[in-house]
Image (tube, rainbow, N blue to C red; front, top):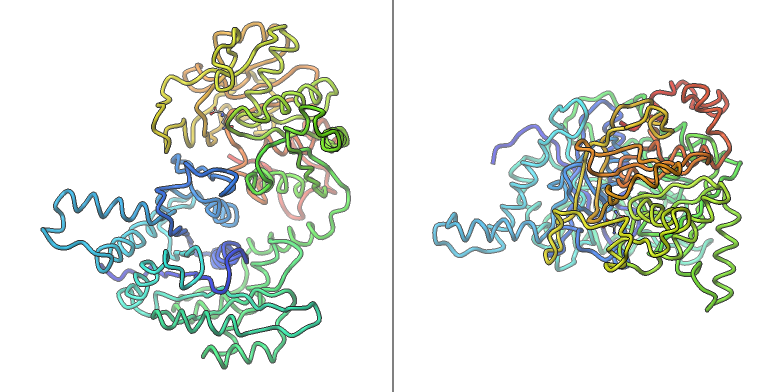
Length: 579
Ligand code: GLN
């Protein structure tokens, strides 16, 4: 393995998981990028699954989809959103992928009859993967990255992550000290709000890390309120680091503040010295934008509520909620997501839940039906779509949400009362949504229509096309097995329900829009995956604008916000387009 000048930053976790390691790792990457460096990220998930494609949304939350069709951990979304980059499936390493690769090599005879072992074969494979993947360009300019942030899931000491820790123990010597550092994210519990900040769990986890051969260069301490000096000194003394290497990451008003918090404590100048990177440590223009976003987010007053009609937990709609947040922030509104379990809209068996669900729906400014799988809850979603259509409430249907909008219209406007997707009723006389020919039943992982595909706009009067700044086509990410039955589309068009976006062959219906409605849009693709804090996704932006009563003026002004709502110093073109 050659020692390139690539700088590697390994982020490990201590004490407990779920304390924001992904946000901290993304924030470190963001401040380095703000200094003009090209930064990439690798997320390591030490589970045996090959990828997140077969995960249940109930157990694991959202499956994040990449341009290349990779179905990955939702943390990859943090890196893409924070850094405004595009990752590939190999930026998500799993134990399953590493073993699969080693076993394939073993079957091919690559190991020349040797016994294949965790050390050195698995650990070598991990290191080779990192070196190779770190070089893959992730920015629009296709320049090879200079820094690679590697986030190791879980906490130090987990059985699953041992081969990875061992791989990096070896790696630090191979790539040389000035090219590798470790950030350890730990928790400082404070048993009562006024009580003492406790350092013992951090001391223990750092000791464990050192015992495995890695030494933290920065200890990032998650805590409720700012670290007291005496506590910082104590961590410095017991964990054998300088006080400047102890970084306080206390709770802040929004995640946009985390990069600023790290920058304020000299993280960039420390890393530039430690990794021998001659960089301008002053925050660049990019960080100024984060400051602006944080300040704006703290000042938001005017509410805009969106009913999110799904059936999984809120956690499963992470990117959808982020996309809504980006759009609300862009138009200066305080987002309120009213989560509704669609099964509660269905029947009166549980009258309290039924009434609560309908009350939430009716009091929202806009309705969003996201993607999903399986029949449960679909009838409730159809009822919500029917309500939004008839009451002229702004509506966005994504994936399944779009497919159900087609079912709803067929049933209630075309009189095809049994219209359905064959996913839910294979016997229906009106199969308005059907299985795609390439779907391969039996094999579960990676068998859907996945990743970035082109959608052409068929009509220049399409609202969505205007929101995409009059683009002739867009390239968004997909994840589906079923599609609108194009053979049945004429009766829809005759009644003002238009298929305004189609795939390049004109065979797949990708975007629907309804006449005489403030905003009734459905997309087969998932625009939430490419939404960025300062570049909100157009279909989501349209929903928020319509819900806030600002869509018409926005369109009339040629897709410009009022000066009051615009970001200071930003041209509208870089605040709204996502392509
Ligand atoms: N279950 C539907 C399909 O497979 C919708 C999937 C989705 O929402 N992306 O086509």
